[in-house]
Image 1: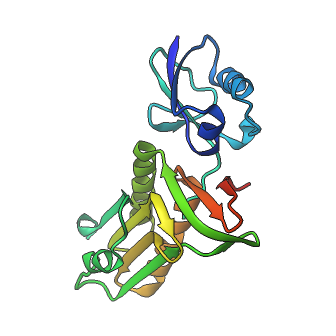
Image 2: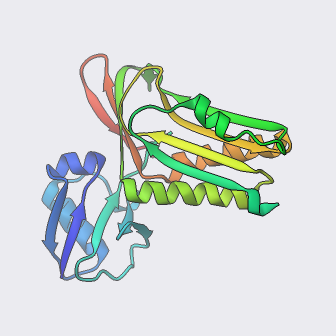
Length: 78
Length: 143
């Protein structure tokens, strides 16, 4: 399935792009592993939250064709 | 009485008008208005900070911020909550975040204000990028 990825903060800087379309067959955990390896992320998944289509989602969320997926590194507003 | 409760969270890209937000909370029912200004400081972790930038995942940040405000309205005996968080470039001394709460009595206003700012810091997808006096820069991702 094709997924739209958007990147923020240090994960965007490491990716070098703000958005990407990827073709991915597995789950969200496998997707983070693949993206992490490809972009050289140092951030372990345990520190990252998943968001799908603008809402926070559990890591076992089933992804679907066309979903917008964002990996949220630890936030630092305030 | 709950019908008159109101709350709003917004991202702000140009400058937080604390006085206007404070005025928006005025309510003859309320004997307390508590405000928290989060201000850009010139140091972090022992390093001199010269400037910073906030970036948000805007759609989710506004949704999550509004959920925090709505939860606080339901949980505390307060009437009004307004919160704004800056995005973009900020200088030392700029207001980065404002939370204002009005209530009939001060205990609930203080408690709700503290709750909202703590939840914003923990949950809302906003990230701080600090530039340091020595020219280095870093994204802040707290443990």
